[in-house]
Structures are given as C-alpha cells and as structure tokens.
Length: 99
Image (cartoon, rainbow, N blue to C red):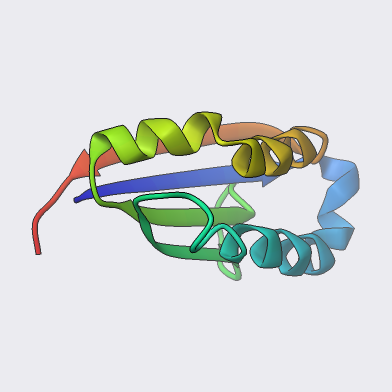
C-alpha cells in the first residue's frame, strides 16, 4: 500500500474563501474514488489549526504503479489545474506501508 499526502498554502487573496474552496475541492477529490484504479481511500480537509498550510489531502493506493497512474489520470489533472490557480505553495510525501 502507498500513502500520498499533499499540503497546500492558499494564495493570500484566496484565504478568505478557504472554507468554500475546501468544500468544493473535497467534493472533486472524493469523486475520484471508483474512477481512478487502485485508489482505495481519499481524505481532504482544511487546516483549522496553526501552520502555514491551509489544505491537506491524503490518498491510499494499492501500489506505486496505481499512484503513478493517478498522477496522469485526466480526472486528477483537471483538479490539479484548478488547484494551481489557488495556491502559492505545495509539499508532498509518499511512502509505502502495510496494514
């Protein structure tokens, strides 16, 4: 199993819209379940605490190959295009794990 975690910082002018943005993006990310092969779990949310990052995504994939396919899947690329207009910074981590 592979876990993919992404954190985003919204552009300053987008921060007042953070709740709406998180709700809309969360719906789009959750819609990927059953569409992207090998995507088993997905969580998306807005940071309610301190810190530089406003949004967080966690995905679980069956394999590294499934994660790689997700990166170029048209449904994911459509969301990525939207996110790129909203954020000024992104960090990610990927790791293998077993249950």
